[in-house]
Length: 326
Image (cartoon, rainbow, N blue to C red; front, side):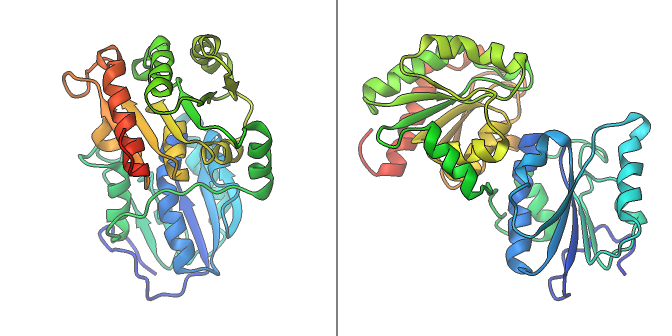
């Protein structure tokens, strides 16, 4: 049994049948961690996974191959969620425990091998570089495995019903979890018209937003201003959202969980950044790019990001994908 050796990398020579994977409360961080799960599932295809995560992020893992169970961790006073997790897993012997949240809980359970991400928000604050690379470094994986999005046949069937298959689709993600990350809604509208004029003449806009009035309030001005809009705000589970995102020609969105989910599906994804750290949370995917508002790092307002800058980045991304002139 490996005990208090936080620097030890993943030992792939050991057989692994049961894995406890402790991951994020937020959707974006949860999506970033899926690359590690995908890698582990391919390395040990017979392994069974238990994933502990926040309730909002649970849908990210529901369709995961090899999933044995989900443990939801709603935040409790005095770190009570950690005690609740420990109570559910302590009686089981695990072949591998991976704790991406840097808690002490992983040290107080039976495990043949454990990997704890030190230097996270709980233990040491932020570190420079992509969050994706931080996670991969802890397991000794180079290059880092890219995030994935798991969907079912039913999710894909619903996407086929909701979205037409005979026209280009431009997905827009005008929401975020705090106001500082939100690009003005009128600029999303202007960007769509620019892309339609310059590249995708028959494109239809598809609006993505989560449930609740706060998300609806952010997406409503964009939805109201666009022609032939397909408004999916608040209508989808996370696996259904992934299936719909995978059908797009392009997704453009604020730094959010939906942006990370879009990149994980492999659809061309452009992330819009202002004060949030693009160097840490840029979208990671086979066809993902980002554009950052000019200004001091960590303080650049989203209003400084122009429609022209976003348009040029989107056109360059589409050109890279098609090999055709923009």
